[in-house]
Length: 281
Image (tube, helix red, strand yellow):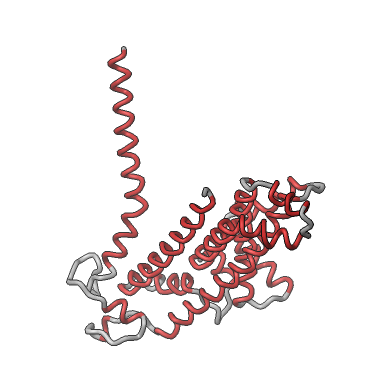
């Protein structure tokens, strides 16, 4: 019997190891494939390796390449750069607004008690639970009903509706681990609420605020479903632009654009992990 249990224990360890390898392979192999194929010079069949090249990266920024003009699939570099500009405007604006709203809400719910506070917390979590397509359709109907034209402004409002919840969760976790006696000591020494917030509370929760802001930025930059419903004619973001190109077929330059987005997302995620690691110190 003991030998049998030892065998089961060893087998379960190997089983979990195999499961972990398969799980991470399922997630990351498609991303690695995209990065690998972005350097393939074959303009017809991306799955057939035809040599290493940077031409797809050059073409998306409008630089001349060694490839034939017939092999360049991107219709307009200006449209691509315009969509990148729109994405950065939306992501930056959304990050500032949602970080401010999420932080203020987290502090208010952590420091004050009022009626229906549990119900209010549930309302904050609701935008994260609702499927993106439902939230996108709801926002579209709302904007049309009250007469707001679909533009970058409508995209920013739509992103703030659910990204504020993400910031709220991260900042709330930081507040839960903060020592309240520091604020009380500040009050005892004669500091008012604003001074206490500026010199005590904000520095202590700043890793959470920055981490939540970075998370909001990267989610806003990559969002497609909600943005697709509430974007106007001249407010196409990069994910919507890529989706439009993919509807006409998978093209080699898409791999280069996707690779750049992966690299940017990883850099932002690394910054977020760095600031999160400072919370435990």
